Length: 130
Image (cartoon, one colour):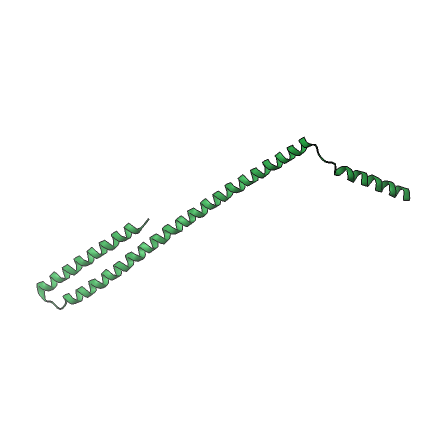
């Protein structure tokens, strides 16, 4: 039994020693080339995916920028319209101090000013929208 253990140990050491045998230069060159090709393909694949991800992210950013710009344009329109409505109410209140034909002319002028301010606000919003 003891001899069998020694013999199996020697065979094991001999087999393990054979595993460390260097490969031929051609085999090493082939292995290196294959590993380099595999690495290059992996890098190219990851670069392509990263480029696609960056493109998608840029599209989202562009979309959000357009949304922000359009929201700001709508806000500017709403502010201009509120100001025009306020000015219109003040002008109409001043017109109430007048009588007859003067009052009618004043109200027409206040309405015309309001219509012009509303048109300007709409034009400004349209110019700012994307």
